[in-house]
Length: 126
Image (tube, rainbow, N blue to C red; front, side, top):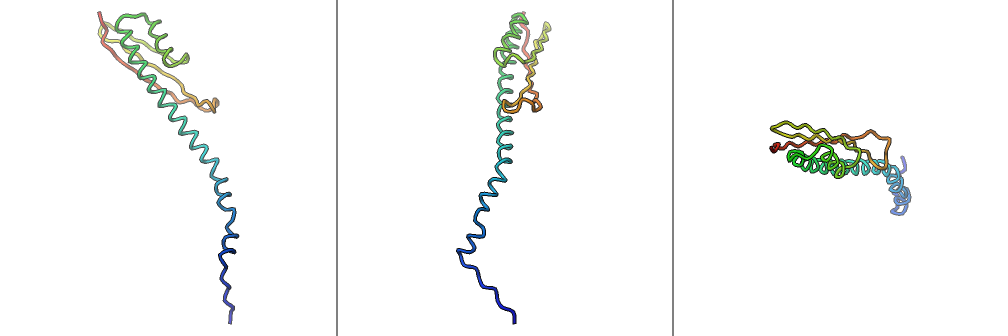
């Protein structure tokens, strides 16, 4: 006859699993921080995209009115930053602005940049 195992009491069961939540949290915390950092980087990229769209729209209207290309570029850089690339093409019919910015997270300057672009077109005024 084999002896039956004695059931564990509630206090014995609790003591065997004590500390496992702390260990699981400690193992999960770095992964959670990476996900949070990526989410913040994505939010920053979307904010820069919205700034570029607005700046391109304003610059296209200014260039279509006949303002100088240097003034248009200065207008865009004032709205988006000094590292912004601005391409302006003006024909008698339409004016097109193309803006390009590289976005890097402030906490990881060595990480690869995300390229954010925006463009706008306006009818050239005579």
